[in-house]
Length: 87
Image (cartoon, rainbow, N blue to C red; front, side, top):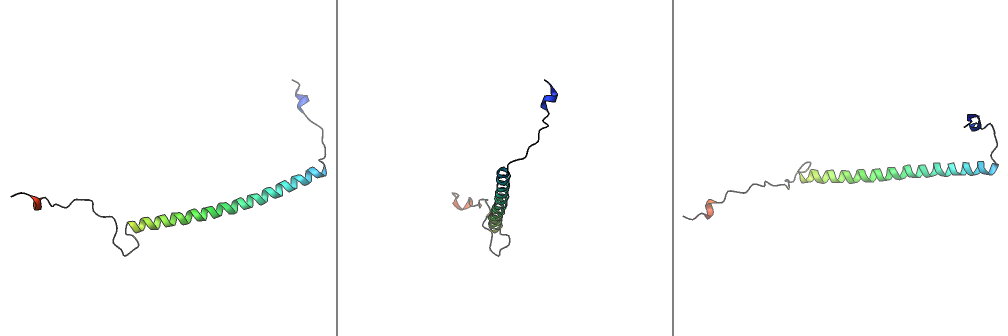
């Protein structure tokens, strides 16, 4: 294959309508990107609120940051065997 055949030395000007369509396309793309960034920020803020609620709930269950007694109780059985033993 002749490598000189791959070189294109021809230059042309785009029609004005093509230039206008390109500018409109890029303007819409910039506007769409700005809306996407806004939407991402909104979703990030919502997720952060949900995570904060979950963390506060876990802290409440563990008795942290509250004056209440913790809900988690000891899982050991009391020794009541002698009470029901036959004599």
